[in-house]
Amino acid sequence: MDLKEIQNLIKFVSNSGVAEVKLEMDDVKITIRTTLESSAPEPTYVQQIPAQAPVQQIVATPAAPAAAAPVAAAPAAEDSKYITIKSPMIGTFYRKPSPDKPMFVEVGSSIAKGDVLCVVEAMKLFNEIESEISGKIVKILVDDMSPVEFDQPLFLVDPS
Image (tube, rainbow, N blue to C red; front, side, top):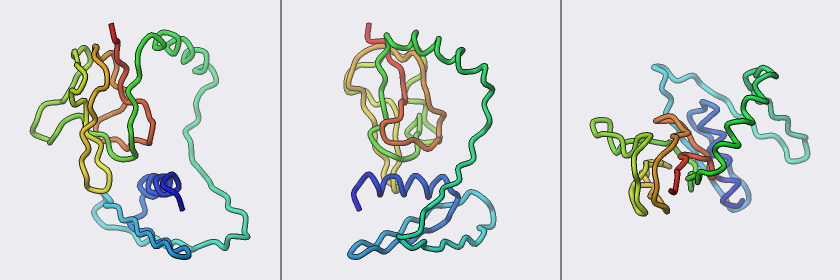
């Protein structure tokens, strides 16, 4: 099992609401535990499917109106002049170092190379994400305390 598969498994478990998943394959044993925000945890039973059986994955997605597609294409053209800062890992995105501290950056903030923009928490480790460019924050693409994926856009920066 490679790192990408493990990262995808962690993402799936965190989004599914399952409290704990144990996976054992040949010489690899993985246990992923998450904390549920509900007051009483519900028991979840996971059954391992044999490798020969086809796996079906059901993903619930909200229905989007068909008219939204042309509208979304116009802002993408405007954003092409900006540089996108992406998440280097899977985890939870935080805009401030702790609940009682101010945000690292806001829309309109000027940043320099090496400035801390946010924190991504992965497996109880808080990783500061630093800017690799100088410029001005144009847009923050992720809400505070939201799960993020590897290579997910976090900020749009105007380098001029």
